[in-house]
Each structure stands twice: as structure tokens, then as C-alpha cells.
Amino acid sequence: MPELYSEVKRQIPGLTLVIAGTGPAEANLREALPDARFLGWIDHHELPAVYSSADLLVLPSRFDTFSCVVLEAISLRTACHAYETKGPRDILQNEVNGYLVKTRDEMASRAISFLFQTANFGQP
Image (cartoon, rainbow, N blue to C red; front, side, top):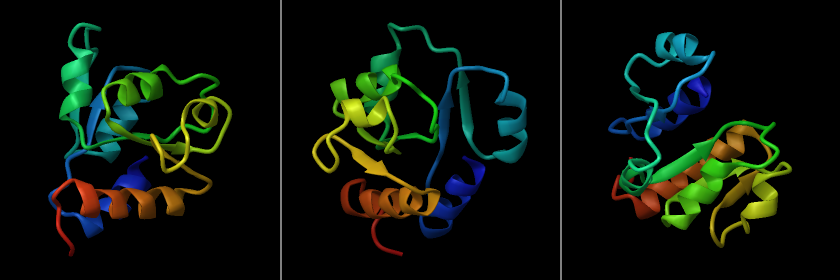
């Protein structure tokens, strides 16, 4: 995730990465992503506001067998980009309610294109 974020942020300097939740990788992520906003654990009643305020949900995992975050995001019309793996590909219709990608480079390219086109970041 840090490499993906760095690549996208080079093209969109005003981008802010927001990470919700906690877990064993949090300390490493905080070190690797010092300018990201870490929200910690979010109560399920507050999740709709978090998703609705986001321009894009990026699911950087290739191992989610069923991704509740994808369901939650698309239920609130938050765009979702994920790897074309079991779980996300069972939920997302590519270019209909999200984007499915095969590589990190494709994920970055899609995110940059999406943000320029839809989130008012403008062209570099």
C-alpha cells in the first residue's frame, strides 16, 4: 500500500489517504505513511459517514475471500478499486460499480485516472 499511495500522490499531491480500522500492520503502516490519517476503530454506526466522505476505496489485498468493505463501499456509492481475485470479483462488475485490476501499476493508473475524472483533482 505505501508504494501504491506514493505513486498516486506523485500525480495528485493534494491526495489524503485515510485508513480506518486497526490491526497487526498498523505500526508499520504509520511509519511508512506518516502523512496518512489513521482513524482507528470505527463503530459500525459511523461507517456510512466515513465511506460517504471518501472519493475512492482502494482494497490493496489479494487475499480477501469475501470483502465486507467492498459491499459497504458500493452500498453507499463509494467507488471501489480492488484486485481481480475471489471475493472482489464476485461482488464488483468491472467499470460498472467498481474497477478490478491485475497489478499494482494498473491499480495506481486506474486510481489516478478515476480521481482526475471524478473527484475534482484536475489534471497535473
